[in-house]
Image 1 (cartoon, one colour):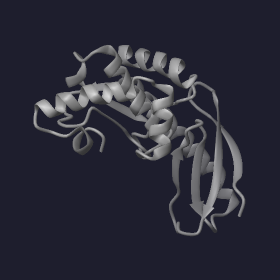
Image 2 (image 1 turned 30 degrees about the vertical axis):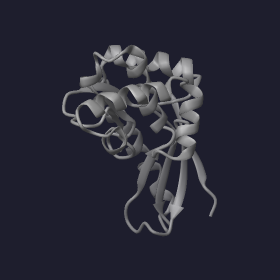
Image 3 (image 1 turned 90 degrees about the vertical axis):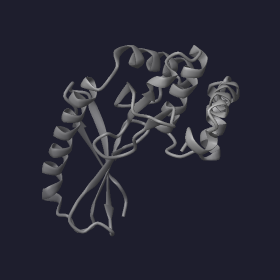
Image 4 (image 1 turned 90 degrees about the horizontal axis):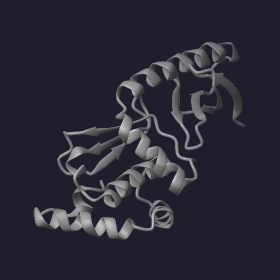
Length: 192
């Protein structure tokens, strides 16, 4: 069955493309996620009546508004500005995320990017790297931005990251040296 397309508005009245896909595996509930291009993919039960679609889209619009409010409270303004510069310089402004902030509770990871759910597109960067060289911190941000496009560390992920951020291998070497000094491995800990 072909996808159906709809449009909803967010709290700022921006239009958001919605791709509706009927899913045989779903019985009662819907699932939705933001796609890398900013559109929303909504999976619904195969036999959901058409009359239920408009209220469901309204509910998603309300959830997006709530998420935007939460995201604005969870975003570090300086880090957001830095990520926007990296996005424009290395990704032509094509990457979209919901929030980015420094966190103090990361023990072994340098950063993380949430996929799906209420924290979809939330990027967290370990505050332990604040004193690292700017180009290494920029790599960690670029790495997490790339996860908005590729959820895992696939060959496509690494190839594109190395292409768009030329200091990738140098930054990974720096981080590996720091981890080596503490008796840890970058591959085991930092890039899970």
